[in-house]
Image (cartoon, rainbow, N blue to C red; front, side, top):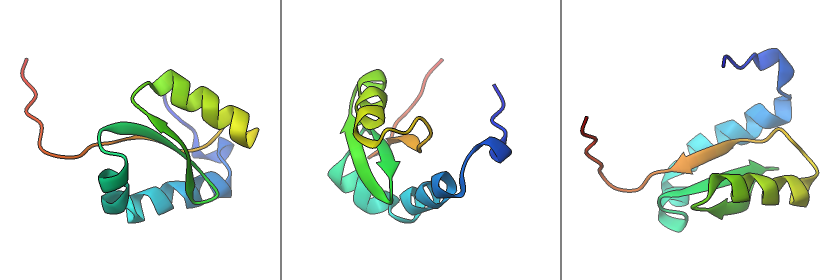
Length: 79
């Protein structure tokens, strides 16, 4: 599915930029977890994507917020 940027708010993109600017610190605090970000802060984090998304929606009342997996360490992926 292609995401059309016109449908996402400036606030979403500001939060997305914040995640990328603070990725190293996030990877130390939330290693190998999903994080949801609103207003430039983590509003939910955990290993279960659905749970993180649901909790973030309840806390913020929003449906659109950056939701990213924060990897920590090196991974080798095999076929």
